[in-house]
Image: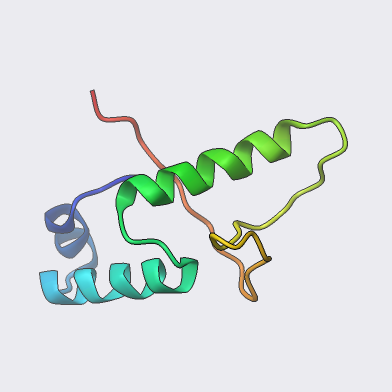
Length: 79
């Protein structure tokens, strides 16, 4: 849900280094380099799902080829 490192480490009882390591691996698998790129990717995927002919599609890499694994992400808007 768009949580920061401190929140994730507290809830999962892991170090901040572990949180960053997992985040870096996710970014690498998606071929992105920032949270903004991740949000853009999710927004593009949600827009594609809104089209009348769309069926569920997984998030795609920057090249837009389907990922070989499922990803489930949820976000929260920070005011």
